Each structure stands twice: as C-alpha cells, then as structure tokens.
Image: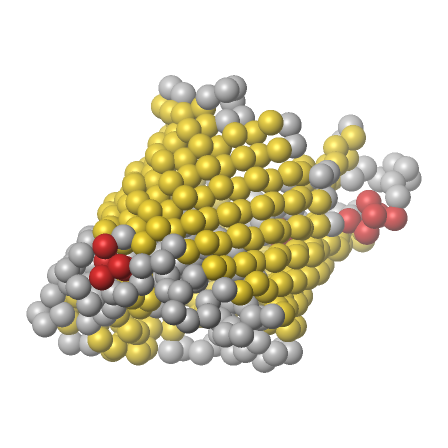
Amino acid sequence: MQAQEEGKKVLDFSLLRQNDVIDIPSDGKNGLYENLKQIEIGNESKLSFGGSYRFQSEAFINEEFATEVDQDDIWFLNRFQFHSHLKLANTFELFAELNSSLITSKQNLAPVDRDELSFNQLFARYHFNPNWRMLVGRQNMRLGSGRLIDVREGPNVRLSFDMAQLQYQDQNKELTAFYAVPVRVGQGVFDNEALNFRESLSAVYWTQHWNRKTSTDIYMIYKEEEAKTWDSGTADDNRLSLGLRHFGNWNKLRYNNEFVFQTGRFGDQEIRAWTVSFNIEHPFLGTNSSIGLKTEAISGDTSATDTTLNTFDGLYPRGAYFGRVARIGPSNLFDIHPYVDMSMGRFNFQFDYVAFWRLSRQDGVYGPPLNLQYPSVNEERFIGHQLGSIASFEVNGFIALELEANVIFPGAFLAESGLDNTLFHAVFTAEFKF
C-alpha cells in the first residue's frame, strides 16, 4: 500500500511489515509520525515503529448447510499489531511484532479466532554480504504464491513459525533453506506453545527469474506431523512435496501454473499424492482490470483399505483458500473458478464463481486447515456452487474498507449427506495501517 510520497519521501506498507519500504529524508521538515517511522541512530543505523488495527464483523446463515440446528450467527473480530524494526549498518536486523487478536459473540472458537497477546514475529537477521543472510526466530512466511505456505491473513490470527533460515539473493535468483516449527496458538496472554516438535517443516525453495517476463519456482518441502487425521484414519504423516511453479507474462496474458507431487509414509501406508493448478488472466477496461480463470485438480484417496494414501496435504495454505467463507480446502478437489477484478480509482470490485467436485469418491471433503469437514458417506462427486463478491475502498494510504459476500449452493454430495440448505456469508473489514 502506497501511503505517502512527496519527492523522496516514501512510506510503502507491505503484507509482511518487515518488508515495508521507508525512505524519509533528514531535512528537518518531517512531522512526529515521519520521525517515528525512521529514527536515525548514527550515520548508518535506523529504528522504526509501526502497526495496524483491523476490525471485522462476520455473519453466517446456515453455516453447516442445515436449518435443523441453530447456525445463524454474527461475531466481531479485532486485531491489533505493533512492531519495531532496528537496522544496524545494513548488517544486522532485529524485528519484533506484538499481536492481540480478540473476538466476541462467537460460541465455538477455532485456533485462528483468538490470541489475546503474543509475539507474532520476533527474529534477528544477519547479512553476511549483499547476497547472503541468516534469520533466527519467529516469523510469518509466504513462499511463492502462498499455495502451500502462507501468512494466513484472512483469519484473525496469523500463522507463525519458529525457525532457522538461510537466504541467498542476487539479480536473477532467490534461494531459501530453513527448518521451522509452527507455533501452536494458546489463545491467552503469552501462552503460545513454541518448539512443539510433534509437527515440523523443512524446505529448500529456489526462484529463478529467467527474464523480465518469465520465472520459475522449484522446491522441496518436508513435513512431519504426528497423529494426522484423513478420511482413511489417523496416523503419523511424514511427506515430501516436490514442486514446480511457472509464472509470468506472455503477450497480455498473466499466468501462474503449479504442479506438486508428494511422497512419504502415513502410518504403514505409502503416500502418493499430487496437485496441478492453472491460473490465467487477461486485462480489460484498461490495465487495472482483469478477467481470469483458475482451475485445479487435487488428489484424494482412492481406497481406504489399500496400502497407499493418495490424499494431498495442502500443508499451510491460506485460511481463506476460496474466499473468507472458508468452507472448502485444498484436498480431494477439482474446481473451476472464473473471476473478474475491476479497479476504478480508489474502488476495487471482484466477482467470482467456483464449482467444486470431489476428485475421488472414496475420500471426504476437507476444510482450509485440512481437517476432515465432511466424510465420504455417499458416491456423489459434486460438492456445490459458490458465488462471491468483494467491494473495497481505499480511503487514503492508511485506511481501507472491504465488504465480502458469499453464497454456497449445496450439490449432490452435501445434499445426500443431509446438508441441503443454502449457506450465506458476509464479512465487513476496516483496517488502519501506520
């Protein structure tokens, strides 16, 4: 978000606030805010402060596709984050970010709903030279397009990892290797569980920019998780994900295509799972609007009684994988997803449609956190239709408003499971960054 630019003065807010671009001249003409954003410490060191406040009001009607029980609800979410960033002589960085995520009026809380007070991020980074650097500590992380590892910005509580990371970057390539343990949210005050080795992640991720128009990601991600539950049962899940992503521009088309193959062990079963996704979009009505199509196939288990597990693990995907409604996650799925994105001045409008099918009739339907949402209890494939819209308005460089609405019409699989009522969902978001 471009917050302010006057001559050489720049305040550019990023999703990960450690990546904010701050450039304020020391000409003595800045106000209190600009001075807090960049405090000079000697000739080559700087300290900055910032943060954000996000308010959301979220409502569901028929959240579980059945009117027989009371599922109509509205709740209110508040998230405040405050950070400080110290940079010493372009060699050493220390970044600390406090988080307070609160919720009211919701009965059954998920781990992503509440975290009263915690360190969302707390890490040190050392630059050996302009190309090599090392990071140790707690960090939010997004790899590539966020398909497998993402910040989880949609829900109230972000996803954090405690990690050791080595990074290389030059003009044409970026290389990251790390070992990480996801932080388990305790929902109270400084009670998050760190370094719980029942679940861990290690990876090597290479991005190559071949030219100005085309790039590739090649990666290996190894995840170990104890007592993982799929439709076929519960066991320790240790799997390696091998991925290739190709993205860029061709003529006026923008594309982002990805293939992932997974192998490993689930209890006494061998893992053989995969996914392939395609995303293309074309500008229209000028360069600020586009029309696009996403489609993906994600493997599901073909038999609960054989020695092979085919259920794909989406690892740590976006909490709102198909919109903030967050009912369908990336496993055992085939979907077709056309969309339109239009920008007019400070207004932005998005409209999309998604049709969902089970790829395998022998496996269930999973939620965004890869929990088994709807077990396989019939032979139907079609899960449902989803219509979504988002209207957003940038009040200024610091304040943004957004209204999202979704409707899901149950298909034959849900209807045959006794879940045949239309789901309605809406969420209003107001966010202030400073």
